[in-house]
Image 1: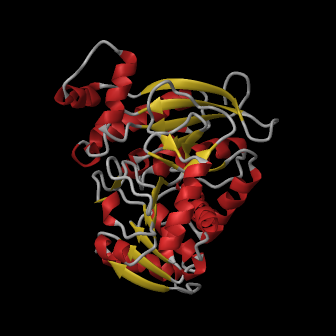
Image 2: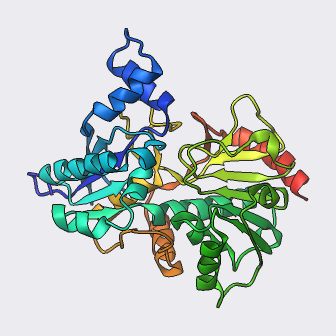
Length: 366
């Protein structure tokens, strides 16, 4: 906790692509331009640092915490070729956060993937709770699917859902949730044997038909709802690849679906795992969000744990049980002003746009 005795949370993140980092450099040096090669080198050389402080954040008007945003300068594609260097940067930012009084650290994006399997060691080393934030992210995703299908008049129980990246933490949580709520699930992963192990954990209560595959194209061709939760660092599809009437929840960062220049009114694509909040978190530069009053679920889970220390942290791969997901679904409902957000690129969907999609996507789905 900080010097005033207030619980404090660390939001730990990184730019999801070079464009985001370039915008941050423009924020710092508006009169300078840099070649991409130099920007990448700057990433390698830069230490982790604190970008912004936030104060008195809360949802019920009485219980509040402080927070700080810390940036770990690396790009997702560096996690394989520079893994030792990236871990060193995360280690240093955890030390900095703990020194500044943070009791919880939410590892955003690929920082949680890089540290996977080592969370307990780093939590003990720095005496700080660590969470990937994947439980709340998954809760926001499943709630968003339920919300948008209701609005579009789509029968969720009769739907086919494709989960791309179903063996990961978020994907497996979505699988465990929807396997009792939809007609069929197409689940994909790079390793089908690993995917089979995930499915077996849900087999005892599964009520839907399920297809397992490493063929993402087959999955999206047969589904009317697609959830992307992969660790891929490049686009897998474009908006043009989906059949009319498809709902696409792209919860990957960087995104798996390219939408720029390929808008379609008969397909509804949105960024998954993002919540609207009743207070602004304006960092002053582009974080890939459509509004200061929206934020990533992975970071907000850290904020909730600081507010409600009894909440469980999210660690590892495929460890989000149905019980843990239910805990965060309930907490999502209990926090006034916190709800799912529907946005694409840097734009929020308006109610008029949602109504327009409802009239087209809903009919095409039928």
